[in-house]
Image (cartoon, rainbow, N blue to C red; front, side, top):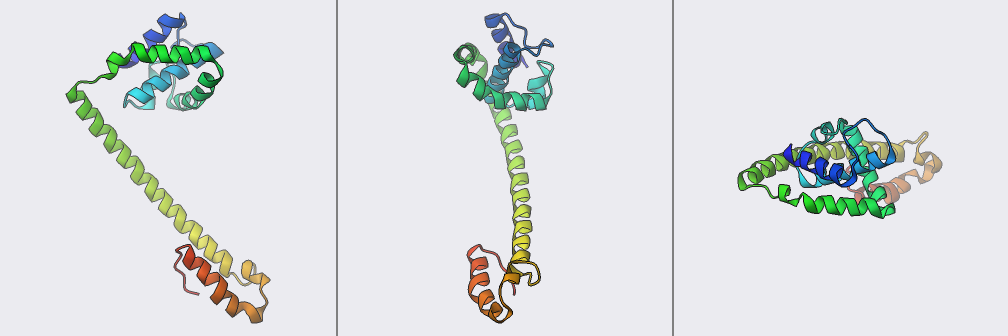
Amino acid sequence: MDILKAIIENIEERTSICISCKDRSYETTSLRNIYYRIARDNTVLSLNKIGSMVNRDHATVINGLKKFEYITKHNESYLKIYKQVLQNTTDFFKPTPEILDKNTTDSLKMEVKRLNQTVYRLRHEKKVMESQFVDRMTRKDSGYLALIPEKEMPNFINYKVIPHLKMLGIKTEL
């Protein structure tokens, strides 16, 4: 947490504004957003830990990270503060080999876990979408096939629907 304290102190010294105080002014929230970005980019700490140092929760940190780009793009003074604070706290971002090994391993494990969860979710969504698509394409009463005259149905299915499904990589038995 020394890294986070150093970032906070650096911002507060530079601006004379307390970013951990209960203040919702534009200046204070913008400076907190700078703190969130520097902490997120240069540590492997959770959003909860980053936010707790300024008495905020993880959702506020997420929102602040989203607003950071807008703030620094539209206000040069905040971009200047960001660059100065980042430059002045770089000594803290040079970890020792044992810290680097532990943090790297932990962060890589967390990233692998997150990616596995994303892959699982995307595969599930793909299956759901494929089944919905096949259902819509092959429903004779209310789906796309309802528009095709009955006598043209076999040709349409064999020459339009099945090749289209194969092209999408969807295995189906019609």
